[in-house]
Image (tube, rainbow, N blue to C red; front, side, top):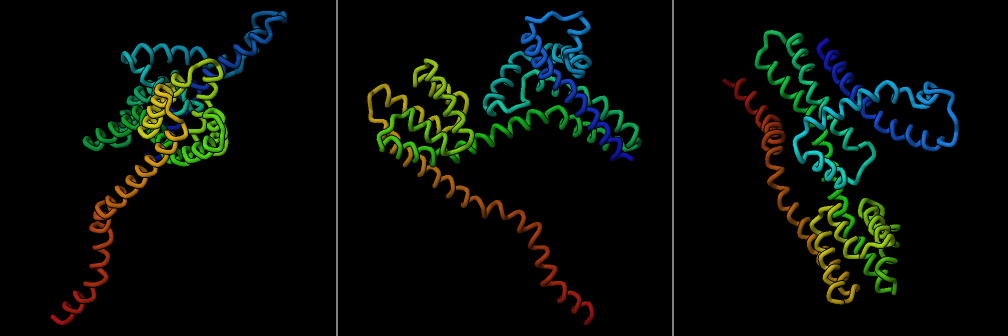
Length: 303
């Protein structure tokens, strides 16, 4: 019964967040539909309203109110921080700022539900009630931040993992006679992943009129990866001083390979320390039981 109540509460919160957040996309779609029909005469206001989806008509006022309340309660600078985190995560679909703020607001308001569940289902267990409310409220409120930070970390790790291979292909392409932009385009097509997506975006910026230096700086702002920042700084210095790009690419590829090898060695040296706890807690007791238990049984039989 308790598990059913918790599941229903979580489902209610999730469905409310989904319904409120999806209206943001529905409103943008309805605006595009109405703008496309500007040349047509509609019969009346009701017909114009019926062009919108059911979710937009029902939940749009609720979602607008939730967004207004969330922006009013949000600390100064938090919205800009969320925008930056979404960019660092690669702007994945479904991670709009308004949707994120609605999720945070509903997570904060869910504390009332968790208190009611704890009081009704766990009456007489004061400490357990407090711990349950704090844990559930913390997961509901800080869960979106943790998920977004996890996406950022995974994206950075993927970029770091793809960077040596990308640089090797860049070196081969540039030494074969291609220009930097052409070599980068061929490399982005050959090596899939977030680094290739950012490379294609950088090429689009340069084709739209941005300088290579500005496009490289924007790439650094969107990724915030140390190894990639080192490569970008080297490329900026090469542009400033007229150094050969192929030589810079070769040296950066070798340096990143060395750092990658050193990072692997560091992880391998940490492995014995990380294995100490599972060995001491999980493996050694079982070994002692298997080895010493027959001797202990024999001793009890003798004495």
